[in-house]
Amino acid sequence: MGRRLRFRGESRNKVDSKGRVSIPASFRRVLEAGDPDWSAGNNPNFVIVYGDHRRQYLECYTIEEMEAVEDRISAMKRGSQKRRLLERLFSTQSVTTSVDETGRIVLPAKLRDKIGLEDWAYFASNVDTFQIWKPETFEEIELGGTAEFLDEMPADFDPLELLDENDETEEA
Image (tube, rainbow, N blue to C red; front, side, top):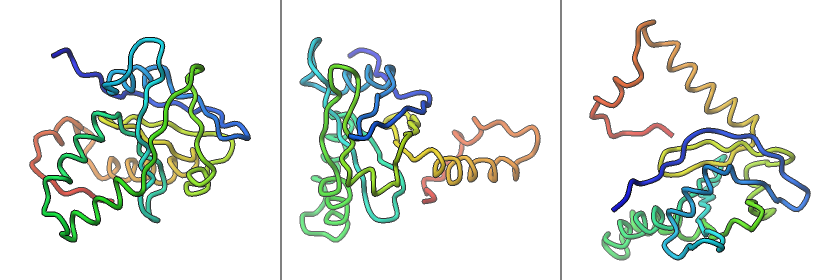
């Protein structure tokens, strides 16, 4: 098994009036590698999870990454409250799409409206996934929160220290 590709970097790309936006080239390589049905000359498929009313961004999964999430959901007790919630958040509130020959995707109006996307889209890598934000929202919520956290740390704080922590909880 070869080395697994990961999403890295950030990009701010123009969104046209039809909702078309270019996916960063490095992200496209990861989408291709993560689509078992992709071959040279074809367009890679991937899944956009738009999620619940509180989510202010679109989370994009490779086909393989989404199947891994779905496998974990399928292993849960059928009919359980947790499984039904995860099914709704990851299966119902998602759409499978593909990158076209020019490296663009079409974001449906429903998804653009949900996150307030207008002229520009901000792409942020998240290792196994990437997110699409309205740039102003990303700056306010994500960058603002990161700055607040770092401002509370000592001057010699090394972010790699966070890898040593066993804290599995996530803040929304």
